[in-house]
Image (cartoon, rainbow, N blue to C red; front, top):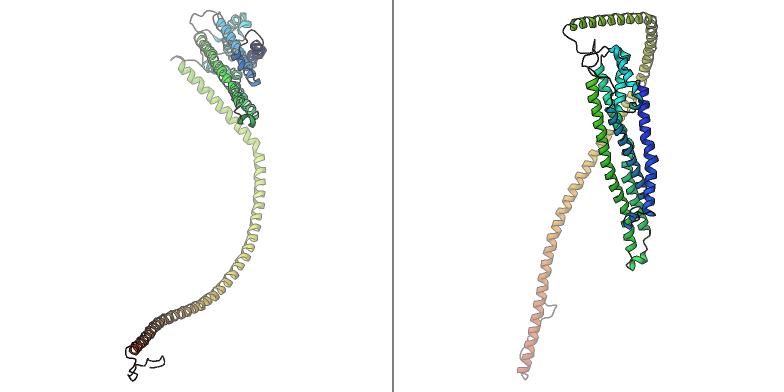
Amino acid sequence: MGQSARTGLETRRSSFVTWFTFLIGTPVGIGTLYLIQFGPWQDPTVQRYVQHLAEQAVVVIFFCCFAALVAKFLGSIYERYMQGQDLLPSWDGKPMPASDVTKLQQKLNLVWDGAKSTYIGRRIANILSFVQNRGTAADLDDQMRTLADNDAMALDGSYALNRFLIWAMPILGFLGTVLGITDAIGSINPADLEKGGADNVTQGLTKAFDATALALALTLIAMFFNYLVEKIEQNLLERVDQYVDAELAHRFARTHGGAATPLDLPNMIQHLLQNQNSLWEASMKKTEERWQQATPQHDKLVQALEATLTRFGQRIVETEKKLLERHQTLIDGLAKFAASANENGREHQAGLARLTDAINLSIELIANVQSSESQLIRLQEALNQNLGLLANSATFKQAVESLTGAIHLLTTRVSPAQQSTPRIVPMHKGAA
């Protein structure tokens, strides 16, 4: 059985699961919603979780996923039934020649219409076709491992639709929650909030989170049943591997590719060496022929390369001359710039020397000013002391004058008749 036929059978099997998923799951999901809303399954608690459009979509997707699992479970039952049938004639345990594979194919063709959509039927048909096409059972073990791996990958890929549906349910639940929260926030009225009427907002948020709760619950249920069905199919695939290993792995005689006996080993080695020598001789002849055919082309290629290298060398010389001219101009400019920079440096150095002398002179002047300032401060202190002494002498003079006046007054009152008594004349301000 070819690869295209095998691919066609897998496509038909996956198409059966696909159309069963949507043609059965969608009507069942819609019917369930109708029975909950208008039929005998009406219940306020249940109806609360299927009011929003996103929640209804989650319910429909859940039943589509469940329908896909039912389709795969039915296929597993049929697979198990075909494994119990006699797909191959009985075997006495002795290796049979590869030419007798047609007898096994005739036996398989009697039940092929029923087994062509099963893993075991395709596996047996592929192995028999491999032996018939090769005419030997060599490399049969590798082919069997390849077929087992292909069936395992096909089984894993057949659950892609289920994984997508299971992944879509919580996403739709979150989407319903977001839309519900948006509606609840949009219906907020500040006047109702001031009056304490926040019940509508609370109810809207509660309904919004119902979508997520429903989606997560249905996702959990779908994942559980998906695990059960996948485990059943994996067990069936393991039974296929065991059956093929027991009935076909050692059924055919291995002339070259199987386990060789000690008597066959020298002949096999000699045969391999002869094949290797013939392969080496053939490859050497082909190489020599190709070399002879390529010699004229090689000469032309060498000439073309020589011409190209010559032109490339000339271009390099011209480029080098241009670069030298440009570099010489640049070097001359740099020399002029260095000379001017050196002359400017000398001028700047002389200017800095003059500036240094001026700064030193200024420092000396500042030092002289500071010394003169200290002398002025001492003179000011001496002047302040002299002024204090003068103020004290003026005060003493006033006291003496006041005392003299008092004495004169007392003398006048005590002895008024004695006019001739000498008097103490007060000193005037102008006396020394």
